[in-house]
Structure formats: C-alpha cells, structure tokens
Image (cartoon, rainbow, N blue to C red):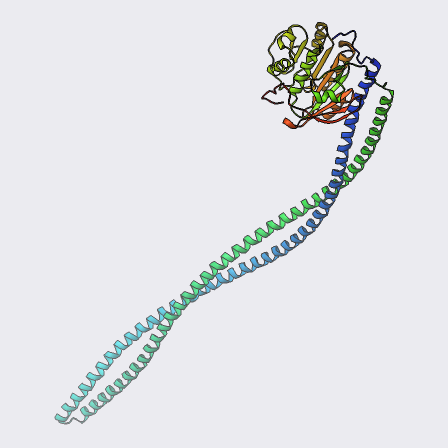
Length: 521
C-alpha cells in the first residue's frame, strides 16, 4: 500500500491523554479490587469479632466448669486420703490380730505340751497303781496263806490276828487303788477330751491366722489401690488447677483478641470509607480525561484487515491504522494471531510479532501460506519480524532472541529495516515474563513516543489467565479498540468491547484455514 496516501490516527496530544486514561484505569481497577478486598476483610473482621466474643464467653463457661471440677477433685482427694488413713489403721489392726493369734497359738501349743506331760504322768501313776494292785493281790495271798498256817499251828491266835490285819490292809489298799484308778480314768478321759479340743482349737487358730493373713494382704492391696487413687486424684487436681489457670489466660487473650478485632473492624471501616472516596475521585479524573480527549473521527481512517470476517464486519473493516488495539483472551489464540499477521502482510503492511508461547514456526508458516505468503520470503525481505520471547525459534534474519537482546534495540532495528507501515502484534504475557511489569509498561511508552511512526499500528494480545487484571487494564484503558476472545473449540466467539464506532455483540468465530498447534495455547 502507499504510505503517503494512507489515512491514519495521528494525534500526539490525544495519544498522551489516552495513555493517561490507561494509567488511571489501572489505578481505578486496582482501587476497585482493593475496595472489594477491604470489604471482604471488613466482613471477616466483623465475623472474627463475633467469633472471638463467642469464644471468650465459651472459655469463661469452661473456666467455671473447670473450677467446679477442681473443687470436686479436691473433695475426692480428701476422701481418698481419709480412706487411705483408715486402710492403714485396718492394716495395723490386722497385723496386731495376727500377732495375737500367733501368741494364742504358742500358748495353746504350750498347754498341749503340758497336757501331754500330764498324760505321761498319769501313765506313770497307772503303772505304779498296777504295781500296788499286784502287791495287794500278793498281800491277800500271803494273808490267806498265813491264815491257813495259823490254823494248822498251835497257839496261832496272834498270828491269825496279824493275818487278818494284813488282809484288811490289802483289801483297803485294793479299794484305794480302785478309787485312784477310777479317778485316773476320769482324768485321762478329760485329758483326752481336752487334747482333742486343743487340737481342734489349734486348727481353728491356724485357720484364723491364715484368714487374718489373707485379710491383711487384701487390706494391703486396698491400701495400695487407695494410695494410687489418691495419687491420681492429686495429679488430676493439680492438672485441673493448671487447666483452670490456662483457661483463664486463654479467656483473657480471647477477650483481648475480641477487643483488637473490634479496633481492626473500626480501622478497616475507616480505610474502606477513604478508599471509596479515592475510587470516586479516580472516576472523576477518568471522566475529566474522557472529556478532555479529542473526539476521534474514524470515517476516513484506513483499516488493516484482520482476515477474520466476523471481526472485520464488527470493526467496519479491521484495525484502525495507527491505532491501539487489545485482544483479551482466555481461550486458544494461535490461529487468530497467525491469521492477523498473514492478512496484514497480504494487505501490504510489515508485521512485527511476538508469538504466543504455544505458537510454533509451522503454525505461522501455514498461516502465511493460506494467504499466499511465504515465511522465509517475508523474513528475508524485511516485511516480517519475529521477537522470540521463549527461545523456541531457530536463529535467522529478522528472528530475534529476546533473551539476548533488549526490546528497545530490537524495536529500533525493526523500525529501521521496514519500508512499510508496521503492524506490531505484542504478547504481553511474554513481555512480562521476560522484562517484568514495570519495564514492559515503560517499553510501551518509549515505543509510542520515539520508536514507531504514527502510521504504525499496535495490537497487544493479553492472556487473561496469566496477566494480572490491573496490568491488563492498563492496555485496555489506552486502547482504541478492545476485542475479547472467549470459548473453546467450535464455541469460540469474538466480541468488540469498545471502539470509536461503538461496541458489537459476540460473533461466532468459524474455523480458519490456519491449523492450530497440537500443543494448544
């Protein structure tokens, strides 16, 4: 096309005001975002204040309950100590009973020994009594013999008297012996009965002693259990006391946190009111800049066709020559960029493109071929310039490795080599990844004021999935045309959001002749 006869946007003052509007739009977008977050913070602060107050009340109730538990634990501890003392007393009494049982057992054993000795003496007496009985019997025999001899002898009266006396004594001795034997029999019977009873008593004493020993063991176990219980209750009481102290500390902290939450709510509310005033001021500044910006008449301004019929129809022929446009997208954009570059080259413009990360050399080559252009020829004849932000393209003329070159140097070299008005297709996500937001914005200002000509057209591609909303607002706020690409696959749509000729409703984007890389976008 003929650069001298083309009509394009050429109003430096207007561009400065539009850039200012873009900057204000960034601040305004950020301010609105901050307003939203402040409101969320205020809501959370109010909720936190309520919750902290509820927590403080709950902890207060818990503290009271813990104090009751501590008091109950103290009572149980006292009772456990009393029970332990009584168990010790029972243990001591059982030990004393055991000792008494042992003494009784010893005494009964001594009695049994003495009784056995008595029985032995009775046996001796019975033996002696047997001797007496034999003597008495012999004495009776002698007396009988003496009576017989006295009867035979002369003058036997005196002898007979003696014999009678002997017989009488023998009979008396026999009577005494019989009485002694009867007494000894009764004594032996009583001794035998006593011995049996002593044996039974000893058995009972031994059994009682065993029972007392078992009771003593049980008392010891009970005493140990009571002592352990008392120790556990003491530990519980101490832990409860500590818990009560901690609970009181928590309640104090919750109360303090609730008070601070109230203070924060008040502070955030004041900040929110200030931010609302600031947002209103930004709206006034934006309105003032809008009024100060000269109206743009686009009737006689040439268009750069996009190659996308729905978009060309919506924009009355394409992108405004010498203007600024933005394509915001959250869906694949490779084929759209390739078609836009191919259409501009076919219409006689030079193109500088920063490919999206997913765009390959083959994608652009096939896009150009679909419009009758060759990628190699376009590069060799200084009609196409590729700014490789991701080091994915081979090195050749007019393909610049942006990791080894500055954006300003590449743009100046591009402006020097080209001999046609330039369509600059920028990849904002790539510029931010390489330069950072501040340098990317600064490069935009430098390009507008010093590098490119008024007839050069800029179309920035903004990936809404990776580019911050406020930074994207900077480009959209300063753009003459804002386009939005949404959807996926056959459901993609292009929408003209703003333009000097007005906005346009969504239009379906048909499949183009440019294939999309298998890697997607």
